Image (cartoon, rainbow, N blue to C red):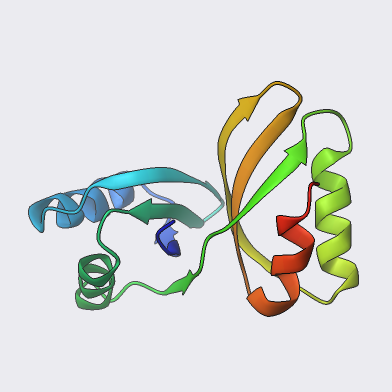
Length: 129
């Protein structure tokens, strides 16, 4: 899977449009996207079809962002599934920079995480959550 970008945005009309337009102008296809905002601060979490061009667009636009490897994790699709994964990462001293919901299959949900310490997170996330 491509790298994941967590991009800080202003929480105001047009912030997402400007970023999406800049990516589109360079031919970058968004593969997965999520985000939100509270107060003045917003963010988008995304994967694209072209990490190099995405990075160039973000750098040229002066965006503050974190880029990292997307680590896939299957999580129990029931109350507490995400809590167990988040607690295991926290107990290992791993900070979650972002995660994307990718879909549900039966009693499992699939997420892609980007974290500050992938080498510690990988064994936690790659085992069945």
